[in-house]
Image (cartoon, rainbow over all chains, first blue to last red; front, side):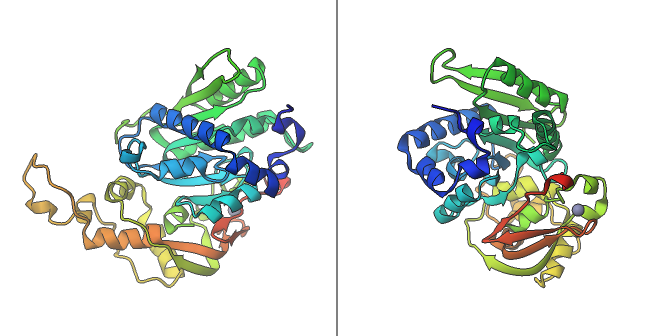
Amino acid sequence: MSRPEDTLPPDLFYNDTESRKYTTSSRIQRIQSDMTHRALSLLSLASPSLILDIGCGSGLSGEILSQTPQYGTPGGPHVWIGLDISASMLGVALEKDVDGDLFLADAGQGVPFRPGTFDAAISISAIQWLCNAETSEDSPAGRLSRFFGGLYASLRRGGRAVCQFYPKNETQKKMVAQAAIKAGFGAGLLEDDEGTKNAKTYLVLTVGGGDLDG
Amino acid sequence: MKLLTLNFLTCAIKACKSSPASFPLHPRDVELEIVESDINLPFLKNILPRLMWAELRTIAAELGLPELPETAPTRDHLVEGKEEAKEGEEVDEVPSQTARDLHRVLLETTVKEGKLVCGNCAHEYKVMEGVPNFLLPGHLV
Ligand SMILES: [Zn+2]
């Protein structure tokens, strides 16, 4: 199977048919939900927080962020803002009436929030798209730098971000982690089920300063 | 989009980042919608110190909403009968009228249609079905 990010830009790939397919596949939903819970456990949020969801798609992760601790969301219910480049995906989120605010936006163009806005950020299966430059006036390095630079500034001191993504290879994995470090983050890569076809890569990012439980 | 979000949103255009006029974005030709939700007192207490109160008042005035108090409430103002609780005593916190008003403005008042205009570059971001469009043409990135 070819990787979707190698065929078309995400706004074209996730057209209405693909968006619906993505959202109704129970297997994808389960994997997405597992990864969101894993990312939440890495964020260690103790109380209701303001969270940015990068590549929120149809709101599968957002629905989990909006849940209470009794339903498995530590520190919840959180308030979230989701960005996605695909209008079709956001259309599905609107139909589901998710609680978060939705933005049609390209994270590769930056993160349009004032400094220190978010307690945390989460991204599930999205940031590998940033490694694609779709136009002659843009490059993967430029997109990664705008994204991580914007994300770093928009998180409060002591804040955290967890980005699960599907790197194409080791080089791409390192390029992404390096871009985050260059933006100022403390960064670590975590691999679940390493070496299997179910391998999952999590980029765990911390912003220095401030108090973690503030 | 909640008014809470508008209190954190800035113009996406690079040249505006350093200009104080790029925040807050100004709502124009807006249709508001009230979307009711459960009050989340711990969240309000968390977010309160991060609000830019003067800008929130400006936006509320531009939208023709009831005037907000001149100064921001404190965390204690959000909890009913806080003063009476003894030191170290575990009490279930009850949201005050101030907390309910804040919840109404920040989390239940939403921009459904219209546009958001940057005070620095005059760029207009369209809002449709509550979703602002922040996709920029390549030359503005
Ligand atoms: Zn501007």
